[in-house]
Length: 110
Length: 328
Length: 90
Image (cartoon, rainbow over all chains, first blue to last red; front, top):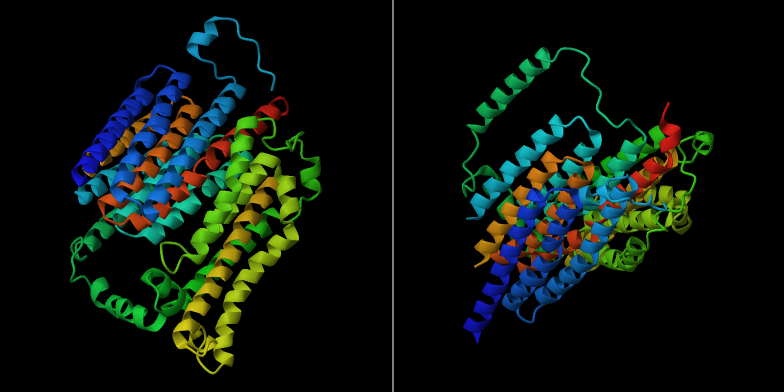
């Protein structure tokens, strides 16, 4: 049982590490802001979903697990919200995506 | 292995610092200093200094960015070009660097157990904490009780800094702010942004709760008054960002903030004076209760509350002082 | 076991730092800072286990709770700048 938990936790954390790396690479290599935001979103959402349960399997039923669950919930709440606020700020300042720029875009209401 | 991680993170820290100095755009400098704070906190944590790392986290994560941006809002976008030649400065910096490098030659090796810092008073603190105060977190014991004078000094430094900023920027929105052409026409905060508003409002009680946990759990885990004060101030600054500055001022008016700044420092000092009145030394908490250990714990709890109150008051006052100056 | 994920997180922090220094727009830098913040939360959680001190998770929790305030401040900052743009031009 102990071994099974270790293997499951190892798989979860390694997968999380892979996704973190992919997201980081995407945030560096993607062509414009909104696609980069998409890549960074991978590290904000799927990586905590994988890594933190991996750590929880290690911690077992302790206070640390409760704290990890709280961290996961707050990360999942704040990450997309911060991305939304950032996209709003970028749109507000007239930062348009390269792809969208070619088609006619109505000015935003704000 | 952690040493390698530490070196790698220190390298990143150095790169960030150089980038901050290099950048002419002040907004970029503000963002990079946010990164600097994050990397610094991880470094502190790798060196096992959880209390210091938590302080860096509480102040650096939200508040310093907010305060720097609000300062940036009332200044220019770009750094001024240096007016005079920099040769003299360069020579002084090179000499200072050489002196510092020479000084490091006399330092003990990294993680040397025979270093003076581990031999002088540290073992005494580690021994005495369990006996005299009976709390697990030695850092809180050292800060609050063994070296209570130093922490009292720090609280008054925070107090003086807050007073200084208020002297420079003013506590009330003067006639200048009302007629300020840059004053925002719609001081409603981020009310139009539904998602930030809903999520932000949802998180404010949790931040406050966590702040109180850090405040009163400081004897058992990393934390204490400084960190808790910064967290609680962050919650109220978040409210001010979401609902507009005036709503936040309705929750905690300026007069209350001034009272908090003075009250926290006063509370700390009064606890110290109580020690004298009860027949012992200044800031000796043992006499506060019939049981000296209980007295020490009670004293720590009260002075940490004092520290937290002052820090919250100062940070919020600085935020409102900047906000009253113009926009934000 | 924790080394793999720690290594991936630190490398990603370096990538985010590169993005922050390269820019080109200020929003890329904000994005990089925000990304670095999430990575810091994860890294602090993993290091807490790596060093066998799970009671130090408070730090990661503090970052998870208040790290996004900075992005709100950026949004507010640009909203104000956009609102006063016509008057700013001398």
